[in-house]
Amino acid sequence: MIGPLVAKEVKDLLRDPRVILPFIIGASIMPVLGFVLMVPMRAGIEQAIAGARAVGFVDLDGSAHSAQLARWLSERGVSVVELRPGPLGQLAEQAA
Image (cartoon, rainbow, N blue to C red; front, side, top):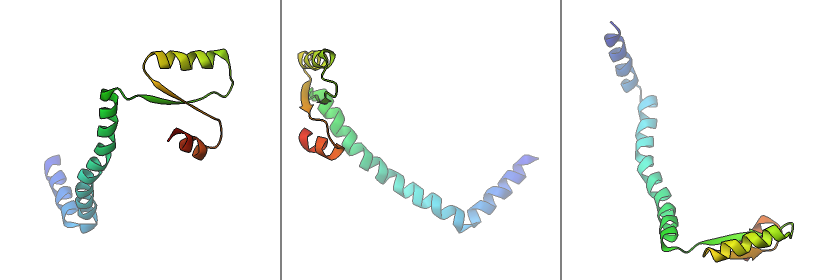
């Protein structure tokens, strides 16, 4: 009883170009987006596998715990880059 109704609605949807066009555009864009997102993910995974680990470290309070954390990370093979506090743009320049 519901089968013919569903078939009729699907046929109506397929006849309307306002419905089909977004599906075609979406289906053609998805592989491109997948490739665009895959490239940086692959680079990050390769870097993690290679063991090149670096951490930007901003010590805002100057406590002994902060220094201890930086030392602990260094002992574990993580490259700790100490950054001076400031605006986000300056932090990015310091890290590079």
